[in-house]
Image (cartoon, rainbow, N blue to C red; front, side):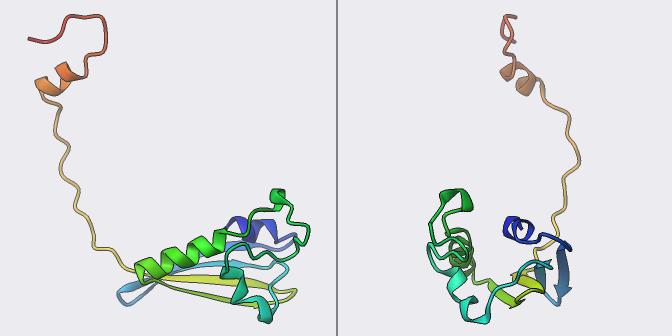
Length: 126
């Protein structure tokens, strides 16, 4: 998301999610400068940066997308990128749909819980 915002001087950045069967496809779509086709695989390499030949640390370290790639591999998630120079870039992450969680009804705190959280100068509960 931060790269999309950083490299989109005009236009927009869109964050979206779509259900695809038992999966969710999360996309970051920007109308930024785009990435040349020859660099689309390299952007996921450690310390790879476009437009930073002087290795200025204020422009980052070039590890963000490498971390994303590793996390996706570890979780067996699919990540894709498409881009057109001068038109923008789309990153897509496909993850499994989580099962719904049922929240338990709110339970009032017990007397023991109230006593154990007493941090004042008051004497402890007995």
